[in-house]
Length: 219
Ligand SMILES: Cc1cc2nc3c(=O)[nH]c(=O)nc-3n(C[C@H](O)[C@H](O)[C@H](O)COP(=O)(O)O)c2cc1C
Image 1 (cartoon, rainbow, N blue to C red):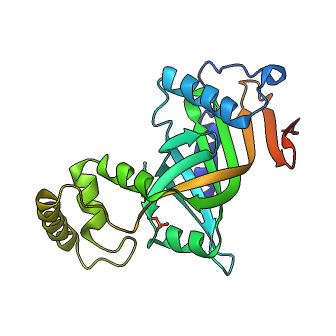
Image 2: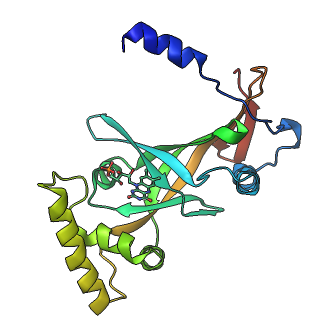
């Protein structure tokens, strides 16, 4: 397919087709975490597909960016949590440059949330609890081999998963040291609401010395 055919095909795709929720920014709470929880509850209530899937962007020390999808594991007053191996490329980025951006997109509701902030490793017991709550296959996959390194064959992976399962059968409480619960402490959170007529609404919270400041942004 040529570039121009793709352009026409893509242009013909609808972006927002559903009934979209309203966003009363005058009624927005003082804390963006409260609004995040409101929107997350609404997304879950509206059966949004995988509302806990989010994009995490990191940057290496030389400024090379990388983005990947992760699962949101928790929301607390401190911020948003995800889990990963700290030996992975993202873990190495975060060790060198403990700042990140998150983006969540809930297409059924025409909603986007963008977060920037600093990253901290959570307490060890949070990481352990998180790992032990994973399904056996997910635990085995996490310890089967070095994440994101070159793999010689899929068969090799399957063999290593079987070995990992045997280890976990023998030691069901095993948690690899590398498994890490990360906390994103927000510096800014932007809530973006689409409307079918393209009247987008953007509300950004910025953390200041005395608390959160919120402002509308030009769409
Ligand atoms: C829906 C979805 C959820 C995912 N959840 C996680 C997760 O919670 N933690 C994680 O480390 N990787 C998760 N992954 C895999 C990551 O996207 C990524 O492939 C992996 O962590 C390696 O990333 P890195 O090489 O940038 O470190 C998920 C992928 C998808 C598509």
